[in-house]
Image (cartoon, rainbow, N blue to C red; front, side, top):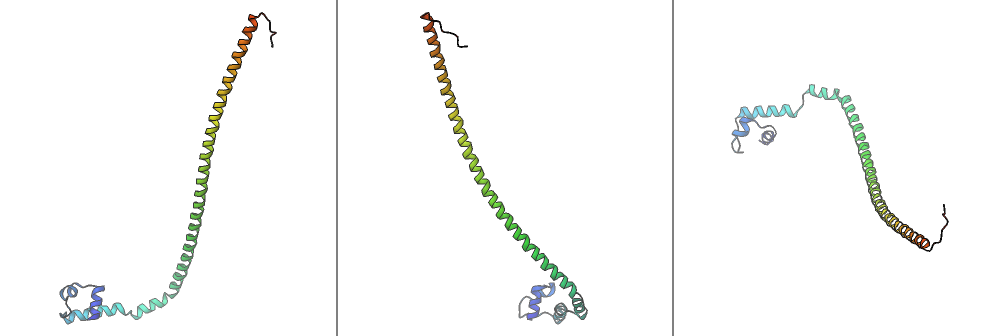
Length: 152
């Protein structure tokens, strides 16, 4: 009954698994025989099957080697991926540093431009004041009838 229960869990049959659910209720003998016979053919391979297994041993070896090669390639691929990820992180950090430096440089450039504009305004104001003083001095000289030689 244990084999039948195990088999029913693995391969439920409509007649047995649904009709005879309790342990006390046993299925008809014909169903048990069929089930055991099916179970034994599934569990015990035939001689022909054994020959197929032994004849495919070289094929299994080839598959095992191929599997080992694929596992090695997978490990190498994972290592390359980790290296690339580390390199990407380093590059990302360098990019952040470069962007921060660019922001500082832009800020400094803006400050220098503002300072240059202030200096240009101060210079222009000074030139205008000097022109006004020169103009006033020329008027005073003309009013005093003193001729000033032309500097050209």
